[in-house]
Amino acid sequence: MNEVGRLAVSVVVPCYRSGAWLDELVHRVITVLEASVAGSFEIVLVNDDSGDETWEIIEELAAQDRRVHGIDLLRNTGQFRALACGLAHSVGEVVVTLDDDLQHPPEEIPKLLDELDRHPELDAVVGEYGEKRHGIIRNLGTRIMAAIFSSAYGKPKDLKMGSFRALRRPVVDGMLAFGTIRPIPGALLLQTTRRISNVRVEHHARTRGASGQSLGSMIGSVLDNVLHSSTVPLRLMSAAGFLIAGVAAILLVFYLVRSIVGSVLPGFTTLVLLTAFFGGTTLLAIGVLGEYVARLVAEATRPPKYIVRNTTDAHDG
Image (cartoon, rainbow, N blue to C red):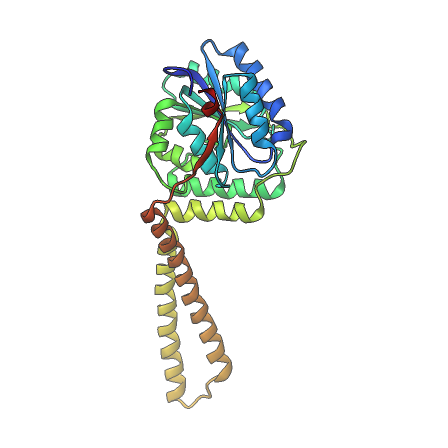
């Protein structure tokens, strides 16, 4: 960024089709930080190839205030990669991340910063919502993610994860050091440090625009969390294979005995059921292996997580 050396606080916001209310968001953040931060600060807005006027609005905001920095990505990469881009371009000793939909009130940022100040031993503070204002699908996805984080990353049951958080610089650098092309911020945070605490913050209902996170993207996030960090699905398929082999052996003995004593075999129905069962299980196992192979190939070829088309700082000369 333009300033030399570390800034006190960086606020990173991934943006997607939020140009209509970015002006309000940025000015509220500036007002809050001017009143609560003793040192300097910056706001990093990452446009995830919105396809609307979002980038133009970001350029206008950056022109009005040199503490606002904009990054325009070449193509849509998703919220997590856009956030990784913002983290990589931030320079603050403390980095605050929040969504662009105004559901994370900027006025709550001081609560996160104050918690870090009061507890020097903490590396990160995550906002805990008293009452969430997300939709049913997203709330369900959050519960699933929490269960995954607990089993795969050892997240304490009383720790709440979320995208409204304050991170110390060593934690940000540690998260970026993983270098994975599928960055999952919550997972990377848990893999980087265990010194994380919650602080109660407000969560507002969405009043403008529609959520950019569809059911499909939610399912994709869940799969990324499970397959990217855990071999549990493979172990489950191995266990299922042993179980099915045992059942098959029992059925073999059962039908062999019935054949010897002259009983009539069920015939066609049994054949169809067994074929469908074993065939379906085999295809499921191949599908699970295919997902892992696809991710291994993607990581091995090392495609870029994001490509920057332009930055507002490039206009400063």
